[in-house]
Length: 237
Ligand SMILES: Nc1ncnc2c1ncn2[C@@H]1O[C@H](COP(=O)(O)OP(=O)(O)OP(=O)(O)O)[C@@H](O)[C@H]1O
Image (tube, rainbow, N blue to C red):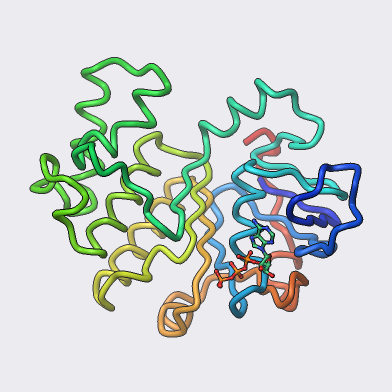
């Protein structure tokens, strides 16, 4: 469950110094575990800022924000670190490490979490296979197309089997058919219990996959897809 109540955020300000111009204003919504929600709005609306807040890269200046049952402002540093391991993030720029192979880029989050070799090998193979990248495991990022790099970034986010998947324009570099395949894969994950939130401008995807949306404009909610009729579910997830 993700629960936001009147959450505001300004870039570059410490929590108690809220004199900066907020980029997110009074956001309130609830997303049940296993929900699939779009995050929409024009350029500069605050989509990436909201995703980075949900990825615990920043904290709100005001309001109540709960991610997977944890109050992120009150949580201790180690609780936040543990929570972050349950979140997969696909940034707008894939940000792959050039000196690492596709396999090693994808394996990195599990290596950092201290997983053993066998588990890393089997999970990396499974996720690369699932995303149609099995033949690219030994290749380096500069030998990939833009769309392949984007799918590697998705694989890297999924290898930890996240309870929450956040994706910032993950279909930007993909052809139409691949975009649909990726969103179908995300929909499968949400049916299996992962909460999925995807920022997009892609109108044809929005029409093709009519999921609820958090719609933003200049940092304010304009749609009520996620603020209306929240479905109750396990508050501890
Ligand atoms: N690190 C930062 N420091 C200060 N201001 C920022 C920072 N990042 C973004 N902003 C500002 O915050 C506002 C929201 O930006 P954000 O990137 O969240 O929008 P967006 O909806 O994701 O846009 P796009 O669709 O173009 O990616 C913009 O006015 C932007 O200039």
